[in-house]
Image 1 (cartoon, rainbow, N blue to C red):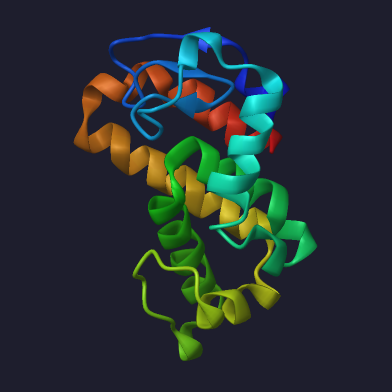
Image 2: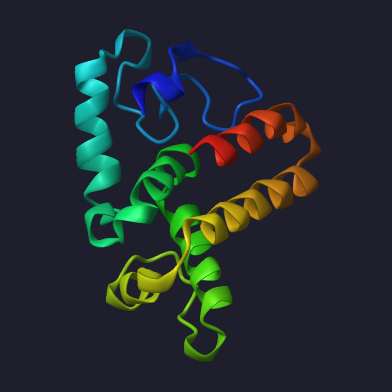
Length: 149
């Protein structure tokens, strides 16, 4: 994740604002982003992203993609994408799309393929760009990220 996210960026058009290693000032206002170390970023990833998102409860095949989503788009949006993808896989056993990673969501992911999750992730980004055309400058990076992770 540290290598994928890269170093310091402060693009005024980026919804996350000031960012380093994928840790944004918007989501972590108390963190000194400009001087954030890799070790501090790793701890933040684990404590604020991995653990609360219950990544370790998901099938191994989904963990890297889902964790990358949580860091990139936040837990709420990522869980909603996960839930929508799970519902598309199991239309007879739909779960509530509420952005909460509970036992029903975790159970629903047991048969979810990573490619389906990637497709729904891409759909999420496409909808963002359609709603906010100023985000188009990030489209190709998001597309590439969906393919690589």
